[in-house]
Image (tube, rainbow, N blue to C red; front, top):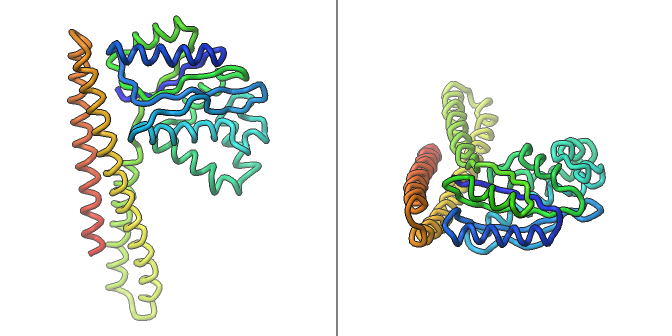
Length: 285
């Protein structure tokens, strides 16, 4: 299962040892580590990245997610209110709305959007933030695990507290819904146009133009998602092939099963996005 994990340790040294243990699990074929980083919270409650994420298609996306995670957990509004230092992301959201609405329209909204697109919710961030007290550090990673026991046993033995969240690609469904809704809006406007007199058509035309722009934007987003999906699929397939080659017995069978699941998920997601783009193109023609 494609999973986001955060393992909180008492200090930097323990976290770096935890990161080494994570690489050992990958090397031994127990899990697949797509990308990982180490973050920490200092005595003043400031969260920072101690070791950046790996490179590559998945590493780049994961790096953006970690940057957003750090920003949300200790952004300007949250730090000013003391909410994140106290350990609650939900409170930070509320504080940001109440005390820095202007900033929410820019960078803060962008960070929450990045986390939303990565399938990481506020409850998960809350749980990590509460455990990540000043002076503590955490290993955060995007992984695929056929079973949870190897990671839990290894990390708990190293003194870590494990948090995990199955990642869900919610943005694909959002794009599909946006295109379907805008297409329906355009059909309704066409009916209004046919029934309207000349005086009313000027107003309707401005709405049609706005709907077409919205549809064009959604079509571009769908294309960008398809390109990203293709790159991440290839990276996941390469990582799975490596683990299948190195694994044996039950572990090999589980990774082979996971590879088939990833291929099926990719085919389904790709087909839906392509169909959405096709419908949008037809509506714009």
